[in-house]
Image 1 (cartoon, helix red, strand yellow):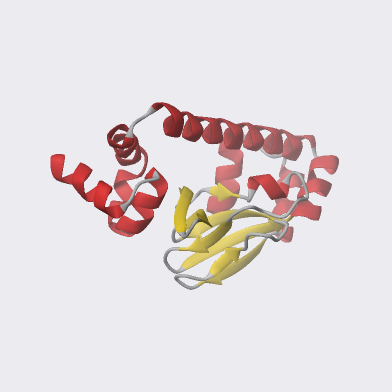
Image 2 (image 1 turned 135 degrees about the vertical axis):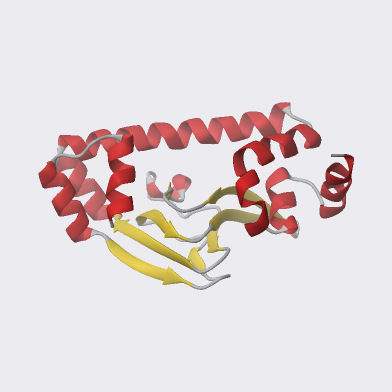
Length: 187
């Protein structure tokens, strides 16, 4: 659990009391490769942290898979559209490999925010990071062509290339695997 707490403290340091209570409330689950962590259409009731493994946010549209984001070790994730708005999520999260995930239930997240200013500061900064990342990814889709999106993908996720399938890479870029192969052959 040290990585979990260390990564929270990197975002915003917690008081000793908040940290101790957070660690008591945090649970752990292990997901097999291909196992759903969160399903589209369900309300996301957890803040997740990847202790080990790799997961992705994705959805299907017209039989095409679109990948929003990958999360590796020491990263937090939520179904953003659902977690903060108490609405069914419009996408799913799946383990791309065996993954150990720490999680905090939403009710406990809210209670910690009310009880500890330091946790509320973490929550606010976490939301800012989520919003910034979403805007950055959207700008990439709007302003960059497929070759430029691939270059951005390599900068952000190049260290994970051996762990991410070509299909998931193409789904993240919003192109077909054939288009991805053409782009890669030009490099």
